[in-house]
Image 1 (cartoon, helix red, strand yellow):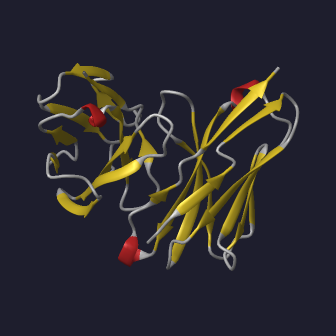
Image 2: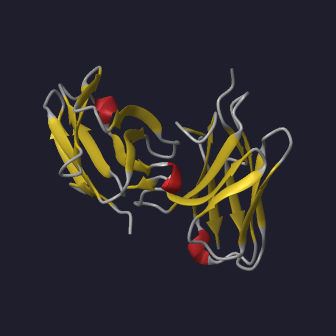
Length: 111
Length: 113
């Protein structure tokens, strides 16, 4: 079985642009969470979705949004990119709201 | 405010030596605590999970301890290998009312030959 897959693996954007990151959870998993990990720091929680509904939101501005599709895949959208948005964005899937399995992440660089 | 503090921030040891990483948390009410290993540029991988009633749990050369009274956990690595070089992250989850996990900043471990 495939693990959590994220795309793209790397991305370079300029300030002010928007970006869409994608995540496919492990087959059968209904919960997807998004995390931002700045270099040298631990992951910071952004969103959690379960059964297509938002179940949790971290302390991130409204420029960050996400959604979960009927097939449980998910997108994270970030508008009006800032230099400080440069980070590794991790997606994790879980069967319900329990143990999380992480993808390899998308490395976003904003220049 | 839920917090997870890890120490040391970074650690360098020689191959074959043992080491212990610390995690202190203020998450309440407590549900479980996980230790993750994160290789550079990769996603974290779960090593162990500790619940309230568990004091010690081992996974190969990794042994985690939990003292729920003092809200402290440790991860002991025995006979370190070069492949142990990674960031080790402590993650604490509250009960249903506060299920969003709180991540520590991680301890960066470097194992030298």
